[in-house]
Image 1: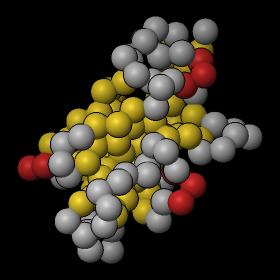
Image 2: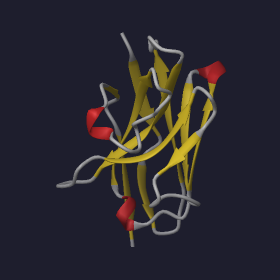
Image 3: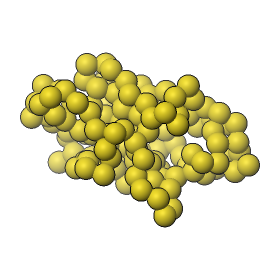
Length: 129
């Protein structure tokens, strides 16, 4: 059984930084390709893909976070990270760690988060002005 344990959320002011962590266990891919990443959901809004990193090392970012957020992973620790800099009030949301896999080598965590099958409980990020 796959498990995601997110941490690192909190309340910060505009311009400050946070680093989210997600320890992943039990995930297996039926295909050669898989990806891990983050999506978020603000109250009253749809899920929004944030960032993902594939098993091929390719990283994908939503336009809204490019240049501010950095995704990384430590395979030895089975941990995924999201470094968030220059945070803005519009970044306020619950952030979820997720996994995806495909035969085609496509990752849908950023482009189509509503279709994901595996994600964690989330960690809250609140940015005040």
